Length: 431
Ligand SMILES: [Fe+2]
Image (cartoon, rainbow, N blue to C red):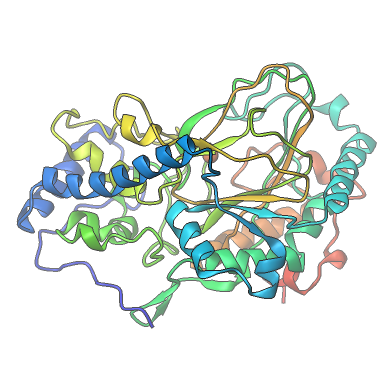
Protein backbone atom coordinates (compact mmCIF):
# COMPACT_ATOMS: atom_id res chain seq x y z
CA UNK A 1 0.00 0.00 0.00
CA UNK A 2 1.27 3.44 -0.88
CA UNK A 3 2.27 5.71 1.96
CA UNK A 4 1.23 9.27 1.37
CA UNK A 5 3.04 11.88 3.38
CA UNK A 6 0.52 13.55 5.69
CA UNK A 7 0.18 17.29 6.02
CA UNK A 8 2.76 18.73 8.39
CA UNK A 9 1.21 19.60 11.72
CA UNK A 10 4.12 21.73 12.93
CA UNK A 11 3.20 24.61 10.59
CA UNK A 12 0.60 27.35 11.14
CA UNK A 13 -2.90 26.05 10.34
CA UNK A 14 -4.87 27.45 7.41
CA UNK A 15 -8.25 29.16 7.75
CA UNK A 16 -10.87 27.28 5.78
CA UNK A 17 -14.43 27.80 4.59
CA UNK A 18 -16.57 24.71 4.03
CA UNK A 19 -19.24 26.79 2.28
CA UNK A 20 -18.78 29.80 0.02
CA UNK A 21 -17.47 32.73 2.12
CA UNK A 22 -19.74 35.78 2.25
CA UNK A 23 -16.86 38.18 1.78
CA UNK A 24 -14.91 36.70 -1.13
CA UNK A 25 -12.17 39.37 -1.43
CA UNK A 26 -11.68 39.25 2.34
CA UNK A 27 -11.42 35.45 2.35
CA UNK A 28 -8.97 35.53 -0.58
CA UNK A 29 -6.77 38.01 1.27
CA UNK A 30 -6.91 35.91 4.41
CA UNK A 31 -6.15 32.55 2.81
CA UNK A 32 -3.37 33.93 0.62
CA UNK A 33 -1.64 35.49 3.62
CA UNK A 34 -2.00 32.22 5.55
CA UNK A 35 -0.67 30.14 2.64
CA UNK A 36 2.35 32.42 2.31
CA UNK A 37 2.99 32.23 6.06
CA UNK A 38 2.73 28.46 5.99
CA UNK A 39 5.20 28.18 3.12
CA UNK A 40 7.72 30.54 4.70
CA UNK A 41 7.37 28.76 8.07
CA UNK A 42 8.48 25.59 6.30
CA UNK A 43 11.81 27.29 5.64
CA UNK A 44 11.29 28.08 1.95
CA UNK A 45 10.17 31.17 0.11
CA UNK A 46 7.04 31.31 -2.05
CA UNK A 47 9.24 32.19 -5.02
CA UNK A 48 11.47 29.16 -4.41
CA UNK A 49 8.50 26.78 -4.19
CA UNK A 50 6.94 28.24 -7.33
CA UNK A 51 10.27 27.96 -9.17
CA UNK A 52 10.39 24.22 -8.46
CA UNK A 53 7.00 23.67 -10.11
CA UNK A 54 7.76 26.09 -12.91
CA UNK A 55 10.93 24.18 -13.75
CA UNK A 56 9.04 20.86 -13.87
CA UNK A 57 6.39 22.40 -16.09
CA UNK A 58 8.89 24.19 -18.33
CA UNK A 59 10.73 20.95 -19.07
CA UNK A 60 7.44 19.48 -20.32
CA UNK A 61 6.53 22.58 -22.31
CA UNK A 62 9.88 22.37 -24.09
CA UNK A 63 9.51 18.66 -24.75
CA UNK A 64 6.04 19.19 -26.21
CA UNK A 65 7.35 21.96 -28.48
CA UNK A 66 10.11 19.63 -29.70
CA UNK A 67 7.63 16.82 -30.37
CA UNK A 68 5.46 19.20 -32.39
CA UNK A 69 8.50 20.43 -34.33
CA UNK A 70 9.31 16.82 -35.22
CA UNK A 71 5.74 16.29 -36.38
CA UNK A 72 4.95 13.75 -33.66
CA UNK A 73 1.54 13.19 -32.07
CA UNK A 74 1.69 14.72 -28.59
CA UNK A 75 -1.48 13.03 -27.34
CA UNK A 76 -0.89 9.41 -26.27
CA UNK A 77 -2.93 6.87 -28.24
CA UNK A 78 -3.74 3.37 -26.99
CA UNK A 79 -5.88 0.74 -28.73
CA UNK A 80 -8.87 -0.51 -26.80
CA UNK A 81 -7.81 -4.05 -27.72
CA UNK A 82 -4.59 -3.61 -25.73
CA UNK A 83 -6.46 -2.29 -22.69
CA UNK A 84 -8.86 -5.25 -22.85
CA UNK A 85 -6.04 -7.78 -23.32
CA UNK A 86 -3.79 -6.20 -20.67
CA UNK A 87 -1.05 -5.67 -23.28
CA UNK A 88 -0.50 -1.93 -22.82
CA UNK A 89 3.29 -1.50 -22.62
CA UNK A 90 5.20 0.16 -19.78
CA UNK A 91 6.25 2.89 -22.22
CA UNK A 92 2.64 3.60 -23.14
CA UNK A 93 1.68 3.78 -19.46
CA UNK A 94 4.56 6.15 -18.71
CA UNK A 95 3.48 8.33 -21.60
CA UNK A 96 -0.13 8.40 -20.37
CA UNK A 97 0.99 9.55 -16.93
CA UNK A 98 3.39 12.09 -18.35
CA UNK A 99 0.75 13.66 -20.59
CA UNK A 100 -2.35 13.05 -18.47
CA UNK A 101 -4.57 12.57 -21.51
CA UNK A 102 -5.36 9.78 -23.91
CA UNK A 103 -7.09 8.72 -27.11
CA UNK A 104 -8.55 5.20 -26.88
CA UNK A 105 -8.72 3.94 -30.46
CA UNK A 106 -11.70 1.78 -31.41
CA UNK A 107 -13.08 1.92 -27.89
CA UNK A 108 -16.36 1.02 -29.56
CA UNK A 109 -16.91 -0.33 -33.07
CA UNK A 110 -17.33 2.55 -35.48
CA UNK A 111 -20.69 1.21 -36.67
CA UNK A 112 -21.88 0.94 -33.08
CA UNK A 113 -20.99 4.59 -32.43
CA UNK A 114 -22.59 5.78 -35.68
CA UNK A 115 -25.66 3.75 -34.78
CA UNK A 116 -25.85 5.43 -31.37
CA UNK A 117 -25.60 8.81 -33.07
CA UNK A 118 -28.58 7.95 -35.27
CA UNK A 119 -30.49 6.52 -32.30
CA UNK A 120 -30.04 9.85 -30.51
CA UNK A 121 -31.38 11.71 -33.56
CA UNK A 122 -34.39 9.40 -33.60
CA UNK A 123 -34.88 9.83 -29.84
CA UNK A 124 -34.91 13.64 -29.91
CA UNK A 125 -36.88 13.95 -33.17
CA UNK A 126 -39.61 11.52 -32.17
CA UNK A 127 -40.03 13.50 -28.97
CA UNK A 128 -40.22 16.83 -30.86
CA UNK A 129 -37.14 18.20 -29.06
CA UNK A 130 -36.32 20.80 -31.72
CA UNK A 131 -39.89 22.13 -31.73
CA UNK A 132 -39.94 22.47 -27.95
CA UNK A 133 -36.34 23.59 -27.37
CA UNK A 134 -36.40 26.75 -25.23
CA UNK A 135 -32.81 27.91 -25.73
CA UNK A 136 -29.71 27.37 -23.65
CA UNK A 137 -30.37 26.77 -19.95
CA UNK A 138 -26.99 28.18 -18.99
CA UNK A 139 -24.60 30.66 -20.52
CA UNK A 140 -21.63 28.32 -20.57
CA UNK A 141 -22.39 26.35 -23.72
CA UNK A 142 -24.66 28.97 -25.27
CA UNK A 143 -25.43 28.11 -28.88
CA UNK A 144 -26.18 30.38 -31.78
CA UNK A 145 -29.49 30.09 -33.62
CA UNK A 146 -32.48 28.02 -32.74
CA UNK A 147 -30.92 24.55 -32.77
CA UNK A 148 -28.60 23.68 -29.93
CA UNK A 149 -25.18 22.11 -30.32
CA UNK A 150 -25.23 20.86 -26.75
CA UNK A 151 -28.36 18.77 -26.23
CA UNK A 152 -29.48 18.79 -22.57
CA UNK A 153 -30.37 15.12 -22.97
CA UNK A 154 -29.24 12.60 -20.39
CA UNK A 155 -31.35 9.46 -20.53
CA UNK A 156 -31.38 8.18 -24.10
CA UNK A 157 -30.95 4.43 -24.52
CA UNK A 158 -27.74 5.11 -26.49
CA UNK A 159 -26.11 7.10 -23.67
CA UNK A 160 -27.12 4.65 -20.98
CA UNK A 161 -25.97 1.62 -22.98
CA UNK A 162 -22.58 3.22 -23.45
CA UNK A 163 -22.36 4.22 -19.76
CA UNK A 164 -23.13 0.75 -18.46
CA UNK A 165 -21.18 -1.19 -21.11
CA UNK A 166 -18.35 -3.57 -20.27
CA UNK A 167 -16.11 -1.73 -22.72
CA UNK A 168 -16.65 1.54 -20.87
CA UNK A 169 -16.04 -0.11 -17.48
CA UNK A 170 -12.73 -1.61 -18.69
CA UNK A 171 -11.40 1.71 -19.91
CA UNK A 172 -12.58 3.55 -16.78
CA UNK A 173 -10.89 0.98 -14.53
CA UNK A 174 -7.69 1.25 -16.59
CA UNK A 175 -7.72 5.04 -16.26
CA UNK A 176 -8.60 4.97 -12.56
CA UNK A 177 -5.64 2.66 -11.98
CA UNK A 178 -3.27 5.47 -13.00
CA UNK A 179 -4.19 7.16 -9.71
CA UNK A 180 -3.18 6.21 -6.18
CA UNK A 181 -6.61 5.33 -4.83
CA UNK A 182 -5.51 3.85 -1.54
CA UNK A 183 -3.03 5.24 0.99
CA UNK A 184 -2.51 5.52 4.74
CA UNK A 185 -5.15 2.85 5.32
CA UNK A 186 -7.85 4.77 3.45
CA UNK A 187 -9.43 3.72 0.19
CA UNK A 188 -10.16 7.09 -1.38
CA UNK A 189 -12.10 5.56 -4.26
CA UNK A 190 -12.93 2.17 -5.76
CA UNK A 191 -11.17 1.99 -9.14
CA UNK A 192 -13.38 -0.90 -10.29
CA UNK A 193 -16.77 0.74 -9.86
CA UNK A 194 -18.03 3.76 -11.78
CA UNK A 195 -20.90 6.02 -10.75
CA UNK A 196 -22.34 6.58 -14.25
CA UNK A 197 -22.09 10.38 -14.14
CA UNK A 198 -24.81 11.57 -16.54
CA UNK A 199 -23.81 14.36 -18.88
CA UNK A 200 -25.00 15.80 -22.15
CA UNK A 201 -24.46 15.29 -25.87
CA UNK A 202 -22.90 17.59 -28.42
CA UNK A 203 -23.98 17.43 -32.06
CA UNK A 204 -22.33 20.15 -34.11
CA UNK A 205 -23.48 20.04 -37.73
CA UNK A 206 -21.56 20.36 -40.97
CA UNK A 207 -21.08 23.98 -41.94
CA UNK A 208 -21.24 25.18 -38.32
CA UNK A 209 -19.36 28.27 -37.17
CA UNK A 210 -18.37 28.03 -33.54
CA UNK A 211 -16.38 30.36 -31.32
CA UNK A 212 -15.17 27.40 -29.25
CA UNK A 213 -14.45 27.60 -25.54
CA UNK A 214 -11.55 29.45 -23.91
CA UNK A 215 -8.85 27.73 -21.85
CA UNK A 216 -10.14 26.77 -18.43
CA UNK A 217 -10.32 23.94 -15.96
CA UNK A 218 -13.21 22.23 -14.24
CA UNK A 219 -12.35 20.73 -10.82
CA UNK A 220 -13.46 23.73 -8.77
CA UNK A 221 -12.88 27.42 -8.12
CA UNK A 222 -11.97 29.12 -4.84
CA UNK A 223 -12.80 25.91 -2.97
CA UNK A 224 -9.50 24.52 -4.28
CA UNK A 225 -7.66 26.87 -1.89
CA UNK A 226 -10.33 27.38 0.75
CA UNK A 227 -11.80 24.04 1.84
CA UNK A 228 -9.97 21.83 4.27
CA UNK A 229 -10.17 18.79 2.00
CA UNK A 230 -8.51 20.54 -0.93
CA UNK A 231 -5.94 22.22 1.33
CA UNK A 232 -4.97 18.69 2.38
CA UNK A 233 -5.09 17.36 -1.19
CA UNK A 234 -2.64 20.08 -2.27
CA UNK A 235 -0.69 19.89 1.03
CA UNK A 236 2.73 19.45 -0.59
CA UNK A 237 2.45 22.74 -2.44
CA UNK A 238 2.04 24.66 0.80
CA UNK A 239 4.19 22.89 3.41
CA UNK A 240 7.70 22.98 2.02
CA UNK A 241 7.54 19.56 0.32
CA UNK A 242 6.64 20.73 -3.19
CA UNK A 243 8.89 18.05 -4.73
CA UNK A 244 6.43 15.44 -3.42
CA UNK A 245 3.40 16.99 -5.17
CA UNK A 246 1.75 14.19 -7.16
CA UNK A 247 -1.15 14.97 -9.51
CA UNK A 248 -2.18 11.30 -9.35
CA UNK A 249 -2.67 11.16 -5.58
CA UNK A 250 -6.39 10.95 -4.74
CA UNK A 251 -5.88 11.50 -1.00
CA UNK A 252 -8.46 13.94 0.45
CA UNK A 253 -10.01 14.61 -2.97
CA UNK A 254 -13.02 12.34 -2.87
CA UNK A 255 -15.12 13.36 0.12
CA UNK A 256 -14.94 17.13 0.51
CA UNK A 257 -17.52 19.74 -0.45
CA UNK A 258 -17.54 21.92 -3.55
CA UNK A 259 -18.79 25.49 -3.69
CA UNK A 260 -22.00 25.59 -5.73
CA UNK A 261 -21.88 27.16 -9.18
CA UNK A 262 -23.76 27.15 -12.45
CA UNK A 263 -21.19 24.91 -14.15
CA UNK A 264 -20.18 22.69 -11.28
CA UNK A 265 -19.39 19.00 -11.21
CA UNK A 266 -20.40 17.42 -7.92
CA UNK A 267 -18.60 14.22 -8.78
CA UNK A 268 -14.94 13.35 -8.42
CA UNK A 269 -13.69 12.40 -11.87
CA UNK A 270 -10.28 10.81 -12.37
CA UNK A 271 -10.59 11.70 -16.04
CA UNK A 272 -13.07 13.67 -18.02
CA UNK A 273 -13.97 12.11 -21.30
CA UNK A 274 -16.12 11.81 -24.34
CA UNK A 275 -16.82 9.19 -26.92
CA UNK A 276 -16.83 10.26 -30.57
CA UNK A 277 -20.08 9.65 -32.43
CA UNK A 278 -18.72 10.98 -35.71
CA UNK A 279 -15.34 11.14 -37.41
CA UNK A 280 -13.59 14.43 -36.59
CA UNK A 281 -10.48 15.92 -38.16
CA UNK A 282 -7.91 17.59 -35.89
CA UNK A 283 -8.51 21.04 -37.42
CA UNK A 284 -12.30 21.13 -37.09
CA UNK A 285 -12.79 22.91 -33.76
CA UNK A 286 -11.67 20.07 -31.54
CA UNK A 287 -10.61 19.69 -27.91
CA UNK A 288 -7.21 21.00 -26.85
CA UNK A 289 -5.42 20.47 -23.54
CA UNK A 290 -2.24 21.61 -21.84
CA UNK A 291 -1.03 18.00 -21.50
CA UNK A 292 1.00 18.53 -18.34
CA UNK A 293 -0.69 17.24 -15.14
CA UNK A 294 1.74 19.21 -12.91
CA UNK A 295 0.41 22.45 -14.38
CA UNK A 296 -2.18 22.33 -11.59
CA UNK A 297 0.58 23.00 -9.06
CA UNK A 298 1.58 26.03 -11.10
CA UNK A 299 -2.02 27.30 -11.15
CA UNK A 300 -2.40 26.83 -7.40
CA UNK A 301 0.83 28.67 -6.51
CA UNK A 302 0.76 31.42 -9.14
CA UNK A 303 -1.67 33.71 -7.20
CA UNK A 304 0.74 33.78 -4.24
CA UNK A 305 3.45 35.64 -6.20
CA UNK A 306 3.87 39.32 -5.41
CA UNK A 307 2.63 40.69 -8.77
CA UNK A 308 -0.93 39.48 -8.08
CA UNK A 309 -3.12 41.79 -5.93
CA UNK A 310 -3.88 40.42 -2.46
CA UNK A 311 -7.59 39.98 -3.17
CA UNK A 312 -7.10 38.29 -6.56
CA UNK A 313 -6.67 34.56 -7.23
CA UNK A 314 -5.59 35.18 -10.84
CA UNK A 315 -9.21 35.78 -11.75
CA UNK A 316 -10.63 32.62 -10.16
CA UNK A 317 -13.95 33.23 -8.45
CA UNK A 318 -17.12 31.33 -7.66
CA UNK A 319 -19.81 30.78 -10.29
CA UNK A 320 -17.33 31.19 -13.13
CA UNK A 321 -15.09 28.61 -14.74
CA UNK A 322 -11.46 28.68 -13.61
CA UNK A 323 -9.74 30.81 -16.27
CA UNK A 324 -6.23 30.29 -17.62
CA UNK A 325 -4.83 33.40 -19.23
CA UNK A 326 -2.02 34.87 -21.27
CA UNK A 327 -1.53 37.47 -18.57
CA UNK A 328 -0.87 35.11 -15.66
CA UNK A 329 -0.01 31.79 -17.28
CA UNK A 330 1.70 32.38 -20.65
CA UNK A 331 4.14 29.48 -20.14
CA UNK A 332 1.29 26.99 -19.79
CA UNK A 333 -0.54 28.14 -22.88
CA UNK A 334 2.54 27.52 -25.02
CA UNK A 335 1.83 23.80 -24.60
CA UNK A 336 -1.82 23.87 -25.70
CA UNK A 337 -2.25 20.86 -27.97
CA UNK A 338 -5.22 19.55 -29.93
CA UNK A 339 -6.30 15.96 -30.32
CA UNK A 340 -5.30 14.10 -33.47
CA UNK A 341 -7.98 12.99 -35.97
CA UNK A 342 -10.51 10.70 -34.31
CA UNK A 343 -13.09 8.34 -35.72
CA UNK A 344 -16.52 7.49 -34.42
CA UNK A 345 -16.07 5.00 -31.58
CA UNK A 346 -12.75 6.42 -30.37
CA UNK A 347 -12.83 8.01 -26.92
CA UNK A 348 -10.89 10.99 -25.60
CA UNK A 349 -9.80 11.44 -21.96
CA UNK A 350 -8.06 14.09 -19.89
CA UNK A 351 -7.03 14.31 -16.21
CA UNK A 352 -9.66 16.14 -14.15
CA UNK A 353 -7.27 19.02 -13.28
CA UNK A 354 -6.14 19.52 -16.84
CA UNK A 355 -6.41 22.86 -18.65
CA UNK A 356 -8.55 22.48 -21.76
CA UNK A 357 -10.30 24.45 -24.47
CA UNK A 358 -12.27 23.90 -27.65
CA UNK A 359 -10.85 25.53 -30.77
CA UNK A 360 -13.06 27.77 -32.90
CA UNK A 361 -14.15 26.57 -36.33
CA UNK A 362 -15.61 28.19 -39.43
CA UNK A 363 -17.75 26.24 -41.86
CA UNK A 364 -17.03 22.93 -40.17
CA UNK A 365 -16.35 19.95 -42.40
CA UNK A 366 -18.26 16.89 -41.27
CA UNK A 367 -20.18 16.53 -38.02
CA UNK A 368 -18.70 17.02 -34.54
CA UNK A 369 -20.71 14.66 -32.35
CA UNK A 370 -19.73 13.43 -28.93
CA UNK A 371 -21.29 11.82 -25.88
CA UNK A 372 -19.69 13.04 -22.62
CA UNK A 373 -18.87 10.10 -20.36
CA UNK A 374 -16.17 10.58 -17.72
CA UNK A 375 -14.48 8.17 -15.32
CA UNK A 376 -16.16 8.93 -11.98
CA UNK A 377 -15.24 6.10 -9.62
CA UNK A 378 -17.19 5.17 -6.51
CA UNK A 379 -16.21 7.33 -3.50
CA UNK A 380 -18.08 9.21 -0.75
CA UNK A 381 -18.54 12.26 -2.94
CA UNK A 382 -19.90 10.27 -5.89
CA UNK A 383 -22.08 8.15 -3.62
CA UNK A 384 -23.72 11.36 -2.35
CA UNK A 385 -24.33 12.60 -5.88
CA UNK A 386 -25.56 9.18 -7.02
CA UNK A 387 -28.63 9.62 -4.81
CA UNK A 388 -29.59 12.73 -6.82
CA UNK A 389 -28.76 10.99 -10.09
CA UNK A 390 -30.94 8.00 -9.22
CA UNK A 391 -33.90 10.28 -8.57
CA UNK A 392 -33.34 12.16 -11.84
CA UNK A 393 -33.01 8.89 -13.75
CA UNK A 394 -36.26 7.53 -12.39
CA UNK A 395 -38.23 10.71 -13.14
CA UNK A 396 -36.42 11.64 -16.37
CA UNK A 397 -35.31 14.97 -14.90
CA UNK A 398 -32.07 16.80 -15.64
CA UNK A 399 -29.38 15.79 -13.12
CA UNK A 400 -28.86 18.38 -10.38
CA UNK A 401 -25.42 19.51 -11.65
CA UNK A 402 -27.19 20.87 -14.75
CA UNK A 403 -29.92 23.45 -15.43
CA UNK A 404 -33.38 22.05 -14.61
CA UNK A 405 -34.55 21.86 -18.22
CA UNK A 406 -36.22 18.48 -17.75
CA UNK A 407 -37.02 17.78 -21.41
CA UNK A 408 -37.16 14.02 -21.07
CA UNK A 409 -39.70 13.66 -18.26
CA UNK A 410 -42.55 12.72 -20.60
CA UNK A 411 -40.53 10.97 -23.27
CA UNK A 412 -41.85 7.42 -23.35
CA UNK A 413 -38.80 5.77 -24.93
CA UNK A 414 -36.15 6.97 -22.50
CA UNK A 415 -33.96 4.30 -20.90
CA UNK A 416 -35.90 2.47 -18.17
CA UNK A 417 -34.82 0.97 -14.82
CA UNK A 418 -35.61 -2.49 -16.19
CA UNK A 419 -32.96 -1.94 -18.91
CA UNK A 420 -30.13 -1.56 -16.39
CA UNK A 421 -27.51 -4.28 -16.27
CA UNK A 422 -25.43 -5.03 -13.19
CA UNK A 423 -22.91 -2.25 -13.87
CA UNK A 424 -25.77 0.20 -14.35
CA UNK A 425 -27.43 -0.86 -11.11
CA UNK A 426 -24.17 -0.64 -9.20
CA UNK A 427 -23.42 2.76 -10.69
CA UNK A 428 -26.76 4.11 -9.48
CA UNK A 429 -26.46 2.24 -6.16
CA UNK A 430 -29.60 0.24 -6.84
CA UNK A 431 -28.28 -3.18 -5.82
FE1 LIG B 1 -14.46 22.20 -19.22
